[in-house]
Amino acid sequence: MIKNKKIGIISLGCDKNRVDTEKMIFLLRQNHIIVNDQEKAEIIVINTCAFLESARKEAISEIFNAVKLKQTGNVKKIIVTGCLPQKFIDDIFSELVEVDAFLGVSDYTEILSVIDRIYKGERVNAVGEAKNEKLIDRTLTTDGYAYLKIADGCSNHCTYCLIPKIRGKYRSIKTDDLIEEVKRIGTVKELILVAQDTTKYGFDLTPKTSLVELIRKLSALENVFGIRLLYCYPENITDELIHEFQCNAKMIRYIDIPLQHADDKVLKLMNRQGTFDGYLSLIEKLKREVFGIAIRSTFMTGFPGEDEKAFNNLVEFIKKAKLFNVGFFKYSREEDTPSYKLDNQVSEKEKNIRLKTLYATQKQVVKENGLALKNKIFKVNVEGYNEYTNEYYGRAYFNAPDVDGKIFFKTNKNLCLYESVNVRIKRAKGYDLFGELEGD
Image 1 (tube, one colour):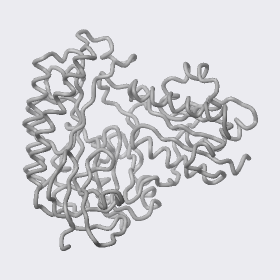
Image 2 (spheres, one colour):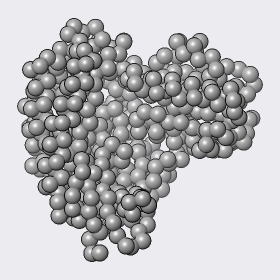
Image 3 (cartoon, one colour):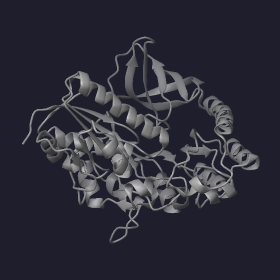
Image 4 (tube, one colour):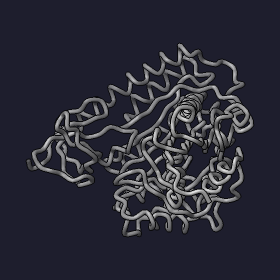
């Protein structure tokens, strides 16, 4: 068995990919050495995303960078894993001849044996070789928080999305396996539940269970101090889930709901189940029944058939919903999706114009939200210190890692990382907030 190789790892794409990478790192560390400097690596592993064309371009760029290091440096082997080989292995195996091995989205469990094979001279296509995902430990790459992937795949079949054809149908991970995984992680201030659709959790298990039942079991663990929910599809946000926000002290009052659009016609073309009025009613209900809840969403512009009236409806929705955090992106026309063949495709120029309009609309909402937070006090988890501005920074409950803003504040005290402190907000700049340590 090959041992003690220096391995550099690049993880691209979503936080679900990150969880797969963390499991792969745990396996690799049993026999090898993980290095942060790619130029010092003998093997480079790239875990890829292929959801959009931009993600595929990023993956190919990283592969080419690794190839250059292979040609000029210490790198001897390149392994590409994840969504790109899972979906496009028939194309890239023959084209990316410098890559020594390919593994699919569930094949990371085979990484050690694949390394042995490539050092014996074999060029490996291991996509689909893993027959089932095993319960294995993880090496966390995050500090103070951890992601928990509760399901893989998707069965919603939105007409623009490649996920079902990359990761397959929706598959909930068994509750007992998730509980065991979290126990092994250690103390977690913030456990972030992720899946393509977290609210669908458990419908496919025998016996059936639900997201709320999972939350209650995770909340009972002594090493979990908070639970955050991402990627909750609106049609599955039940009264039971809302009640859990109300009564469960470990539930962080934050929810990510990927609405994608708000025009009824466009939503139907997307094969989404919602409507303008239905989405607005849900948001109003959440704000009414869960005090202080921060709602995040994402919206797409430029979908085929999004005429001026449909786009104006989306802009109007953004104004009325007054969401706390919002991300926008342009429709990407992906082959092998139903929307690829739709008429009335929107030009790239028009997409860019509409994207700017959406950002400008939400900017005003963010300004109003910031003014409403002025002089209020929030508990902030310290995540770092900026020596150039002499400011600490961290996140409050309304900030998810990486996607939302941060809170910056000054103090003469020496604070520890991940310490919780009370910060009074003084001003806002976009999604970022600035304040002072309460009691200074």
